[in-house]
Length: 325
Image 1 (cartoon, rainbow, N blue to C red):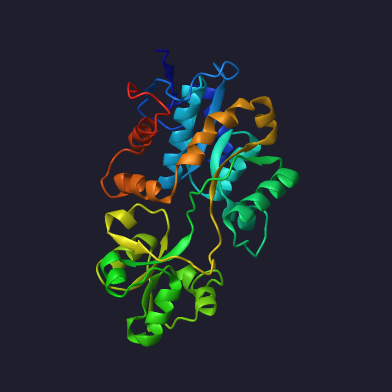
Image 2: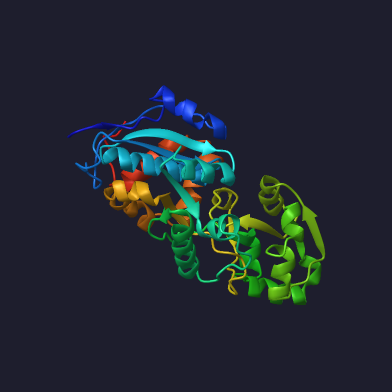
C-alpha cells in the first residue's frame, strides 16, 4: 500500500522566515510514515504543501496532529506548526497565511474575534452564527460543526456527586440551599469576578457560596480531588477529569458560552483546495467530549506523547492504517 510522509519537522527553511514575525517556528517532531486507511489519497491534493497550526494546549495539539495525519494520508506534504502560543497569534497566523489549517472554537470566534458580548446558548446556533459572520467579514471558512465542546463547567469528585445525587448545576443549587456550608468553590481569579464566570452563574442558578478560593487552573483540579474544595471551575474536555475521577455537572440552563471545535481555513485556500474539507470532516464528525477526555488523560496524566496518542486514535478509527509507524 502506498505510503505518504507527514513532515512533522521543518521541511522548508523559508517557512521559518515567513512566520518569524509572529514569533512562530516550525516544530521538531518524530515523523510518521502514514499509510492511508479510510482516508485515501486525493489526486488533487497529492504533492501539495499544507501548514497546520494549533494553540499551545493539549487538546489543540492533539487536534492539530489529527489534521496533519489526515492530510498526509490524502497525499499532502504537511508542515507542523502546532503549539502556537495564544489565540491571537494563532488567529493572526491563519489570516496572514503562515498556517493554512487549524482548529478553533465557536465561543472564541464569536466573543474574542468578532467582538460580541452575548453568547448564543444553542451549540449549533452559536456555530452557525460565527461561521456565517466570520466568512462574510473576514474570509475565514469554518468547516462542519463538531460535538466536541470545550466549555466551562463546575466539577466535583465522582464520589461526592454520587453521594449527593448531583448531575447538574440545578442539582448543585438545590443541594447547597439545603447545605450551605458545603458551598466551597475553587476557581481562577478571573473567573471569580467575570460576568460569564462565577457571578453570572450564581445569578442564573441562585446557589450560595460559603468560601471561594482562587488558584491556577491545574491547582483547581487537584483541589477538587483532594477535598480542598467541593466544587470547582473546570473545562469539559480536560483529561484530568478522567485522571482524577471527577464528575462534570451539566450546565442545564446553558449559562456558559458554547465552545464547539471546528477546522478553520481561509476561504480562498478552501476554494483552491476544496477536497481538503472532505478529508478533515470525518475527524470532526467522530471526536467528542468523552473521547477527548480520555486522549487528554493519556498526555497530561499518563505522560504519553501527543503525536503518538493522536496517531493511535486515528488508527483506532480506521482513518489511517495500523501499519503507520
